[in-house]
Image (cartoon, rainbow, N blue to C red; front, side, top):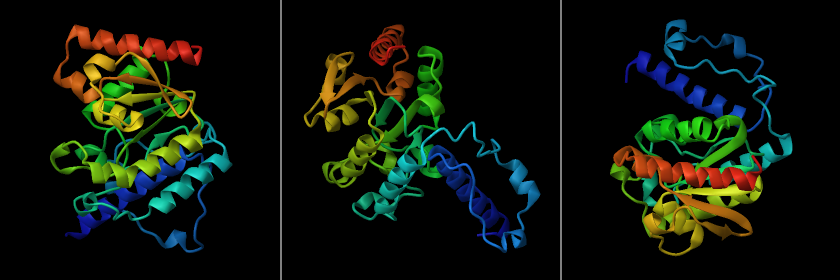
Length: 251
């Protein structure tokens, strides 16, 4: 690996960590006394997309709740609880507002998510952002929290297997218990089946309300499915599902 690539990789990891800190509500970062000795290549820094700023405006979560989610992340650690650890680049924990009333639960990370360590940042993620911000009139970062059933990318983006779900499901459950949302949206069949504890036929059961440990649960299509089957019927179905969610949220 070249020195240039090493710097780029380190900066990517730093960016991912800063995003995580911002999502957890931290307003400032403790620095070592010799931090001024660090020397980053400005050209590489300038090549990174989206400058990050841990401003008070973006740090909208409570410190206590941030610490709870951070404790879950620490418990997850450098997870080797299933075979998915063998091929991952990054663990994809979750992102958004830990005080959010609305939590989206997906299936698992894809290639872009595995690379960046953040959920729903690829094409499906852009579609999800469009659903949230254009379709629902909400802000993705401020108004929602997003996570997946499993935290590591399955090879070839295949569906997660039972042992992989069993290994990761407790962490997803702890995230939801910590956030205490008013509504959960399950994105796609694997997520819906895991949350309900039974096989789900998403084409027949989407758009209906269910219950997850006392929290209203809405099933809808995964954004990746919309991209594959981008029909007016499917788009309208998801729009109608999200309008039902907004009604329960009182928006």
